[in-house]
Image (tube, rainbow, N blue to C red; front, side):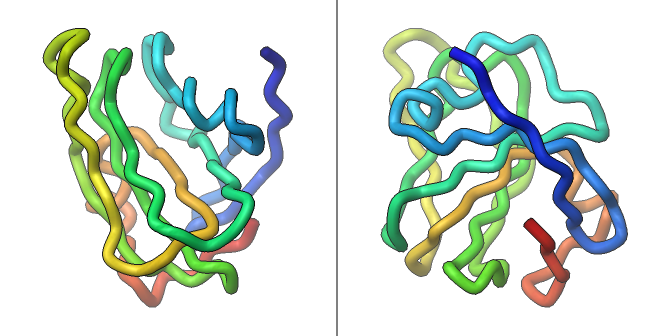
Length: 123
C-alpha cells in the first residue's frame, strides 16, 4: 500500500504527514511501524464528520492524537496513548465531538508544542 505525503502545520511546526485517506489505509494506520520521527505524523481523512475511535492494535510505540472538525479546528486531543498490550487488546480512544480529520503524532508532541484547542492547524 502506497501512501502520499504532504506538509502540514501545527502551530509553528511543519510536519511531513503520511496521508491515510482510504478505509484500508485508515484501518492499518501506524500499525507495524517502528516509530515516527519528530517531524512526521499520520493524517487520517474521513469521508464525513462522525465519531471515529482510534485503536492501538499492532502499534509498537505511544502516540498523541488530535481530532479536527470539517473546518480544521481542534475539537479534542489525547496524549501518550500506549500501544496495545497484545493481540486481544481492542481498547479504543475516542473524541467528544464529530471529526473529519485525525492526526497521530509522536508521544509528547502535544505537551512539547503546547497544543491547545485554539492552536492553528493548516492542512
